Every structure is written in structure tokens, then in C-alpha cells.
Length: 323
Image (cartoon, rainbow, N blue to C red):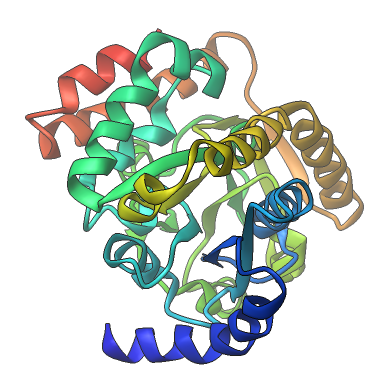
């Protein structure tokens, strides 16, 4: 982590020194995103930072250092938040399951963020973040964006037998339950793997396929979507505890705004589907009981794998997150 610390210090130092003289009363926090600047899963985080900085003048400011591996390996971001190298991180639960395996349950929630805050699910998950990641679970974004299966071979039922599918841990159990041969590749290798036929498809959210250029080597998208492609915003717990009530108030106001963007995200997803259609990606749509069974398998297989790996907290999380 020393090397990461030096990189952060180099990136932040000039900005912090410049700010010190003009805003000595302000608290300044360092923030990093796991995703590239101005892309789907970073843009609302950057807007969140702008909200804090606008309303927090003279009280609190967030210095956005960057994202998408520009500052550090995205998979090191969780530990950077834990150790305080970074005050605030924007990253999905799948990126820090090495610290908190229970974060994998977030994708399986059947509740909105607001419902989780009311039924105790958020508090339970936040307590686990406090204890295992030394982090406060500040917010969640992109909660209304699901995952899909994208294919180069047409299927007429939820059966991936004989197909090689590029996976991440998020949907590995689900795809295996449908008979897929699961293959792990780095994101940067997906295009070539599709082009060469090394894989027949992959899992990915509704948004982002065109940004990556994968539409050029993708023929089909399977509907309906499943799970949630949410991204967590974590804050180092020690940094959070040091904040005054006024400083927390600024952040919490921005959190409330961020978590109200569900309808906006749904509209963006609908536009993205239209763009996919224009790019030549055809929809394979399961309907009625077939669709119900497809989604049930997604959650049953996901919970089965999760419970096997998380015997202590798994049953309680399933109780809190399932309807």
C-alpha cells in the first residue's frame, strides 16, 4: 500500500496545498472511483461530489483524485478506503469481497435503497462494513440498472448448455445453473475473446456495452434483466467519525439526492437499449412463466452460493433482502 499512498499523495498534494490558504476552515476529503472518469458508473459519483462542494463551501469539500485505474488498481480501492489512504471510494461490492464477502448479497436485494434503510437491511450491512472494512456505507447508486446476458448465439429458452460465457463472481453461480461453461477473462480481453469465438457471450449491465465497443461483436441481449448493477460509496470510518454535524449534514443531503436518481437511471437504460437495437443487438425476450422461472433461478442460485460461503451472516441477510 506504500506505493499506492505515494500515488495518492502526488495526485492530491498540489490541490490540497492550494486550498489550504483560502479555505483553512474547510475539511477536505480525498475521493477515488473504481471506474473511468465520466463513464456510466462514475458520472453520478462525480455529480455527487459537485453537490457536496457546491453546498459545502466553507464547511467541507471533496477532492476528486480520479478513477478507472488512473490512480490505483480498482480492486485495491476497498483496502485504500479501509486504511484511510482514500477517504471516499466509489466501487461495487464485487470489488471488495476479499474484505467483506457479505457484500456479494447486495446484488440479490429485492428492495429499493429507501426500503432497505427502513427495514433494517441497510443498518445490518453498514455494521458489517464498519467492522470488516473500517468504512461507513454512505450511499448506493445505479440501483435500478440490472444485468443481462449478451450472446453471439441465439437461444430460445434459459439454457446455456454448450456455451462458453465470460463471467465475474457476480453471476457465476447463475450461469453455471443454466449449464454454461464459465470462463474468466479481464475486461480488456472480452472484445478479442468474442471476436475469436473464445467465448460465446458475457454478463453485463444494461448500460456500458457501446462505451466499450462490445456491440461490434455482440448479436443478442437476453431480457429480462436480473440482479442489480449497483455501486457503493464507502467512506473511511475514522474520517466519518471526525466529521462535525454540519459536515455530515452536507454529505447526507447529497446522499439523499444521489439515491433519488432511480427514475433517471431507468430512462438512461431505456435509451441505451434503443442504442443497442440501432447498433444491431437483437433482444431475446423471455415472457410469462418462462421469465418468472428464469428470474427465480437467478436468485435461487445466487442465494445458494452466497449462503454456502457465508454461514454466519448469510441467513440474516437473506431474510432482510428477500421478499
